[in-house]
Image (tube, rainbow, N blue to C red):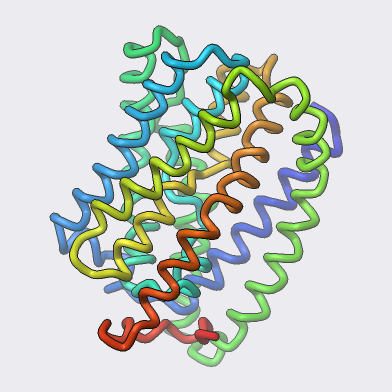
Length: 300
């Protein structure tokens, strides 16, 4: 793997940890355990993210005859938990902080079991031979999500004045994210010509729109929760997806990296109409005001 590619991934990992730490500064223990105390909402999130989307990925892989890198990308994205960067956009979109943080934590913890099990089920369904153990998932989840989140919560608990650092930390993390992503955009551009065609872009679009629809329908009675789950279901964890792909298909790592970046760009574009519609809906006076956001996440 080229040096520049490795450094790009390192910068992305640091940026993610910085932003998760900042989210932790504005979160509480009640936020982190919110979904575990509400089994129906927890089950709905599992059904949308960990049942509907993997099933949709299997259907798409069987229906389309596209490049193997696209099939791998759909498969590995389908099994991943909520990405650590997601809470920032969900909170800005009007989501309740307790549901947003609770979704991040519950998906991270459940991923240790659900990711390996889902991979084996998909192997059975499509005849692949991918593997990624619970220990491998746990190492990534603990390092990238749980440790920075818990440290952020602990620092905020014992040093409340540090909470004011959350906005600048988020800004620094965002800049680092852009810097780290630039080399991957080059990879995606080079891969685009090879991957486009045979229904690849259509399959990725169906996957993304299917996630938005599943999350919206299963998000429960509260409008803001439907929005949060729709965003979370369509947005998969690119870092874990790449780790699974590299561990099982090293010869396809660059093309899969390109396909993952193409998915991220396509997901951003396809989510814009939904985000605008939900912003308008949540802004209507007949809806109750969303739960106040945690310190450091001032709504604009």
